Image 1 (cartoon, rainbow, N blue to C red):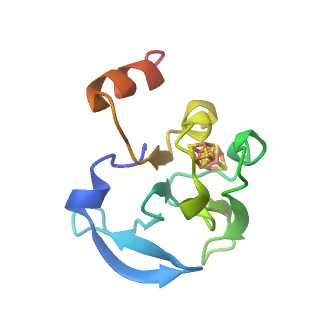
Image 2: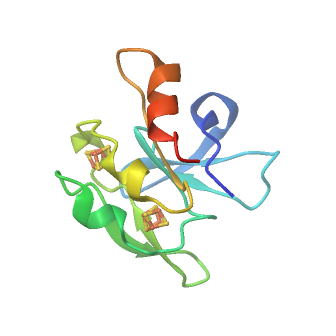
Length: 115
Ligand code: SF4
Ligand code: SF4
């Protein structure tokens, strides 16, 4: 299942991890999202690592869920330059990067035109 793109307004921060927020929602029991500027839905991340080499500023680090499954963590999300390359390569839409400038609707349409 893809990340809830509205999580910044509809989920709540329940803790921190490696300097960023961890989010949960009563409507998505058991699911967590790591990061705010760069959100990674750990519940749907498959640990494929495709987002790591495409990030020009090395935002992501390999981590593991409590169940020992590989995921990526946006440890350096404050360095993100909003290029959206990670979103474009993620095969399961586990990532959502904050929108900035222009029309959010246009950007969503461009990024997900092949959905
Ligand atoms: S949007 Fe670009 S800079 Fe930001 S985390 Fe993704 S790949 Fe890295
Ligand atoms: S590309 Fe998507 S599924 Fe693959 S490691 Fe990154 S966030 Fe997880």
